[in-house]
Length: 248
Image (cartoon, rainbow, N blue to C red):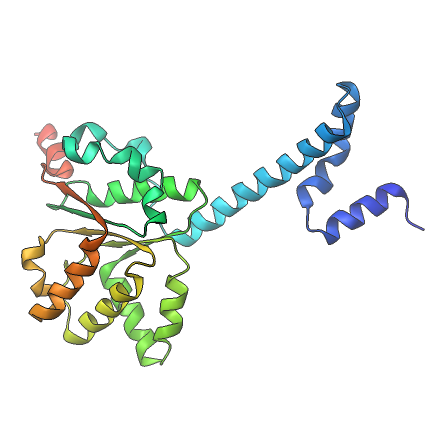
């Protein structure tokens, strides 16, 4: 015959509520001292359980995101941003664009902060419980090619669809072969009006035919991306170049 305490621990284990299991006695002592109602005591335990689960979910999503840990808003110099870009930050960081399946497209010269900016937004989204993936364009293409050769492209696309936002870094930085272009376009089309993409590129749209090789495919890709999108143009001096000049 189990004691009341043993029965409580057993039931909480069955219910997969580890935080309540580890905290209920300590919180009960606080409840007695402060003369809490039963409802206050129960609410405190549930709040603890929910908060720990939220933190654990954020930790899991952060690991899965592959976001660079250093690229957050904490160490991003917002003063360098053009005024038009700066006005979008709060709206983008709150994640409401995800509900509309909108894309964020960041253009600018190397070193202008495109990647850091989108990663910082990605970190903010994860803090809100969203699932984000950061991946270079070249790595994404290779992963899709492997999946296609193994006849698992549909499965791969379904897995990627589980992310609320996919950050594709440096699209067009490495020129694609026709086969690579095809799987990249397939991925872009699969996300269209279903989930958000966040893309950085050194190439303006006028040069995207270098990526997709074919004028019609290029036009179709751009059309899907810009249909629901926020375009951020970071035409500013390279941060790395600026830091180098300070050392001279």
